[in-house]
Image (cartoon, rainbow, N blue to C red; front, side):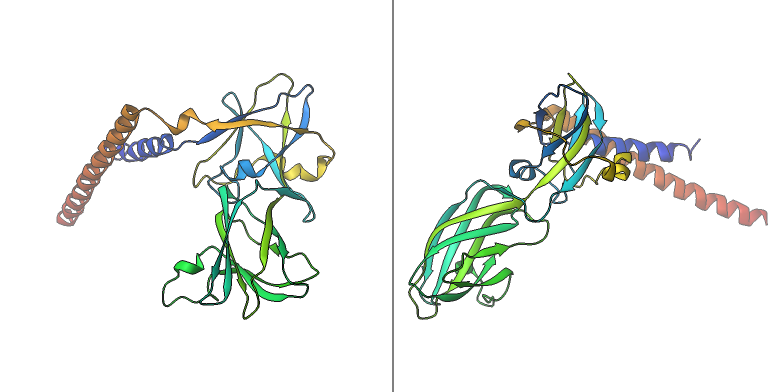
Length: 292
């Protein structure tokens, strides 16, 4: 009986911990008229609300039933525009550099930046992208550190910067080394995310919800992943209808206190039980030695 209590306590704590996790965002999916597979574009507004850069915290539900889906990345030549950032240009005259601050409204996945510049008819400059504000660097830091990507900016060719990896950026800086030339004029910067799609089988007249925003949630493992090649690429798209804060994100304060109280109580009981179990095992070993 003593030993049966141990797995029960572990299960109790696990359940309480799981209940404390919540999806922060949810949105309705457009209703479909016929049963079949449909595409859901993972637009920048969705990726900005995910907690995990691999999109592992996205889930689709029909009531309480979890719906299987595939994640499919389209070819590299296809991109989705990210909402336009605000741009601030500052001249670092001491180091003869132009600092371009790019500020997004949300933490977007940024895979490509396209710059529109203006300057003298002929120019060629070294530039790089960083997350760190070069104007606020430590004394020991150098401009060569924390570079995400380096490039050469030259006249007659529009600068295109490709960024790699699963990252989220709310702020980026482009540093242009002017040396002794006049600074270039930055007219515009456009940002893009590689196109990503969710593919799911949806049924007529059923209400589906997409949820996201839960940290450390692992990628789901559905049987559907084994049949990716069997699903046509010409299936139709449906829309995601306005993300909103999920009620799960803001449980009542009293509920949080109750949950924490029970968790600490369970932990305290577990510690007491482990102490008793250790004492019992030592006494049992001593008894066996005496019998021998």
